[in-house]
Structures are given as structure tokens and as C-alpha cells.
Length: 165
Picture (cartoon, one colour):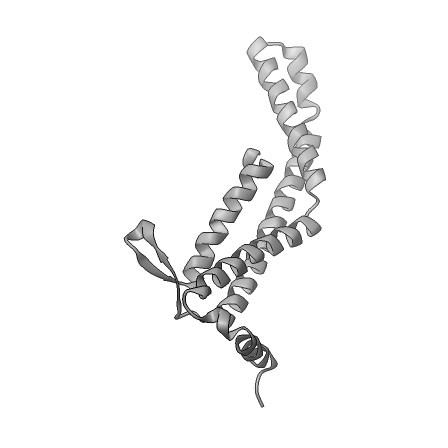
């Protein structure tokens, strides 16, 4: 009795066999990696409450600025008023931490699953790209998947100001 997962992988490999030969495999690997990054982003955006996270982070930032101003002005009354809000700010920080942790965990698990599936389809031993930056080094799919994932994360992060917290 054979594993249904591997039967599916073999069927996909058979159907898309022309796309798994050099040099077309480079485009196939890159496309699957980019598509995987988009899937990861969509899944994470669906599960994580990004609007609430943004609101919480903005509120924390405003509170921090007010606290710094009170310290700079040496205004004790204003500082005590700001400190009364510290419990609420701590709750917001905990919420933001949980949302970011949830986002990271979901992204990591999804990323690993998609890496495994795409590597099983393409094959871990096939050269998919000749990377010129490292002295024309041949890269297999898992290495190329990691590079494309990092590149896509940087593009997404700068386009959405994800790293501005």
C-alpha cells in the first residue's frame, strides 16, 4: 500500500514533467516560491487581526511619546497622569506580542509545509538556479526557496511598513 501524498506528488510530477527540466525548472521553482510567499501572507492576514495590531502599536507609540515629553519637561503631574494608563498600555503590549507571535508561528508552519511540498514536487537534488552573486553557484530548490522567501518578505515588509513597530 502506497502513501496517497506521494501518489499525488508523482501524479503532479508526471503532469508537469516538461516544467521540471532545465532551464524551465528555474522559472517553475521561482514561480512556486513566489506563489508560496503570497499564500503564506494571505493565510497570516486572514488569521491575524492586523487592524487591531496596528491600532495597538500606534496607541503604544503615542503613549511612549507622551511619557518621554513629560520626563523631558519634568512635569510631575503630567507624568503621573500618563502612568495611570500604564496598565492599559501593558495589556496592549501583551496583545501585540501575542498577535506577532501568532503571525510568526503561522507563517513558519505554513512556510515549512509549502517548502516540503514544493521540494517533493521539484526534487531536492536538482539544480534550479545558477546564482551569480556567489560565483555562479548552482542552487537546488530548497536553497532557492529560502532566498526567494527572504526577498519576498523584504518586499512585503517595506511595501506595507510591516517592520515599522
